[in-house]
Image 1 (cartoon, rainbow, N blue to C red):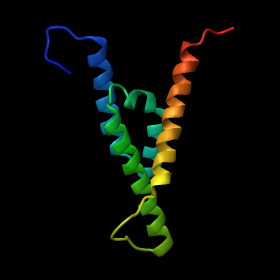
Image 2: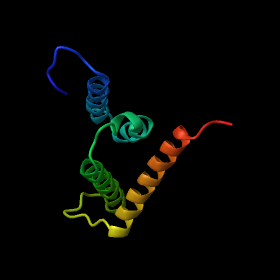
Image 3: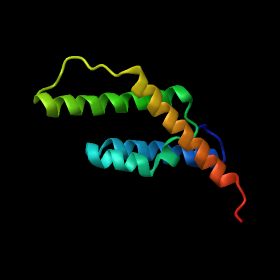
Image 4: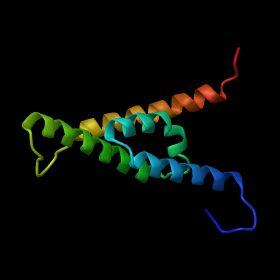
Length: 109
């Protein structure tokens, strides 16, 4: 966002992203996960790839931590995320994004 005498569409979209992201972070994990999927279109507006990759890695770490906590009944000091899991999640996300872009740009018959 920039300080100007007028507001453009990008400013509104970024404000929506910031507001949604802040609100979603205050929710319980299960609700947060569902809301992130539901509002992913708005949450990814004008984010660079590093931020998206960091978010995916953080999500994998949270899932692994929850799994370890449920399995062993306590928090683990370190978590290991296999590179293949990370690459698979990133590949799936970018395939999904390309599919959504293609679906919106193709003319309907």
